[in-house]
Length: 335
Image (cartoon, rainbow, N blue to C red; front, side, top):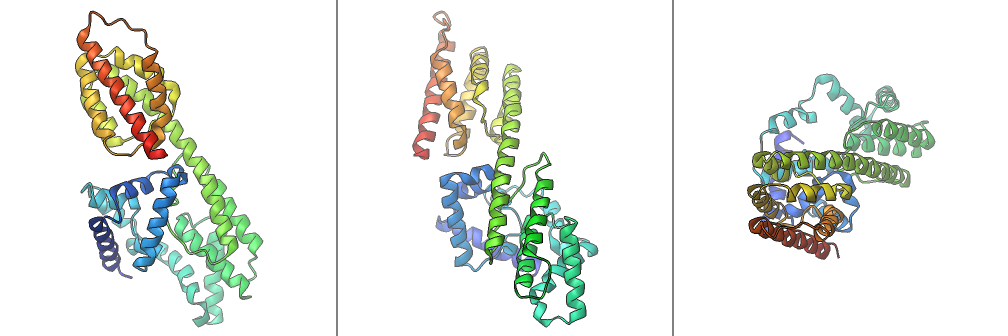
């Protein structure tokens, strides 16, 4: 498949499904987030819809080209600012030595047509790179795992199932040592129970890894947001809430957050209300429910005497109403 063929194929599939309403911004938005969100029931439903899409158009993982979140960015938000860099990272345009790395495992897909010398050369190359953890792109890794299992079960390779699983989990341990989000947003047909078992173990451990990373990022983000509000900087608050779209998870900051809002001037409170109105007008950020419930609780417990500050009281009442609206919307959607 050529680059342009793949690009046009998936481009029109996404465009048609968006126009028909079978694929929505919410579905793409949910599937692009780090994998801890994929454990939620509604996201499992979205993944099922995506599987149906693959079957409907006879798609494979190679047809996607870009992460689903990137397609959402291109087609819905119209943001193509990084597309050149992303295209350069695709296997169509990688350096010759990296292309050779891909070709070895691809040639083994048709091993029946290979002469012994070529077969042994490609198999040795794939096993060597597998053992050296060279297959760091996870969708390629699982193609390789399936190929190695196939060859062993067809008695044309001595590389055992035990060795395959042991090496795959060794690579997983290396991946988990990083402080980065690990994406597992791809589809591979698991032809073997062992391949599926390995994938589920990857999925489970990566889920916990990503959850931890995002909680740490959320804590730092809430601290940053509180400091930005204190600086009365609407531009930075807007960038934080509407562009970065960080998910707030740690409710231990709710008291400090409420105190910061109460201590802000009326213009910042009014601006903040407008920004969260935009941020939460749709049903995203549902993992923030516990945080906003705690904010709601803190607001009801605030013994602040504002009898002589009627505008501040008016704005805080509006803030309480908005928080209640956010909580109700999230609770209704999670039922």
